[in-house]
Amino acid sequence: DAGVIQSPRHEVTEMGQEVTLRCKPISGHDYLFWYRQTMMRGLELLIYFNNNVPIDDSGMPEDRFSAKMPNASFSTLKIQPSEPRDSAVYFCASSRAGAQETQYFGPGTRLLVL
Amino acid sequence: AQSVSQHNHHVILSEAASLELGCNYSYGGTVNLFWYVQYPGQHLQLLLKYFSGDPLVKGIKGFEAEFIKSKFSFNLRKPSVQWSDTAEYFCAVKGNTPLVFGKGTRLSVIA
Image 1 (cartoon, rainbow over the protein chains, first blue to last red):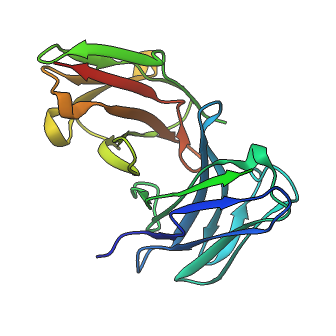
Image 2: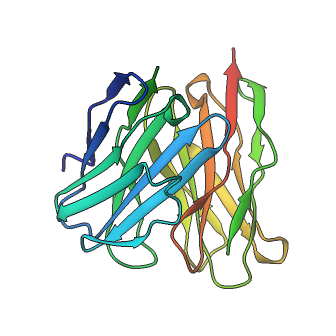
């Protein structure tokens, strides 16, 4: 199993630009999660999907952030326009259905907004 | 809603020292508890998890954690740390919502 795949691994962009982060969950997993990790705030859940449907996006910080999951094997997290305070590591994770299932994390995308 | 508190922000130990990292959660219902580890520059990996049964859970690399329901705690332990255990450790709880993570504890093991 290839695990959760994220791209790009690193992204450097200028303030105001659009940023798109991509995630491919583990095949057969019904849940997909997007997290943001910063030194100040730790690991924060932004949004999660179940069977491609967004269930809870209360962690999305602002309207500049949006996430989609057009099919079971692909999700995007978009920031438009990006700001320096969006600089962080963004992780995608997936899990099977069921309360006892473990979340498996991707390698993350390190975003730097100048 | 559940929350997780990790008491130590940064712990520095010598090799072979014993480790205990504190984790307390707040949630009155049934919980599933996890410890994840993040090695420098890497993603989070599951160290161990508790769902039910024996409150003493053994994980990979010699780590264990004990669920004490009366104290709402799930502390992580290892009898003898190695330099390769240098990493950040996250406690997480799952109650009636998806995983909630603690802020993490950075462990530095020195020779």
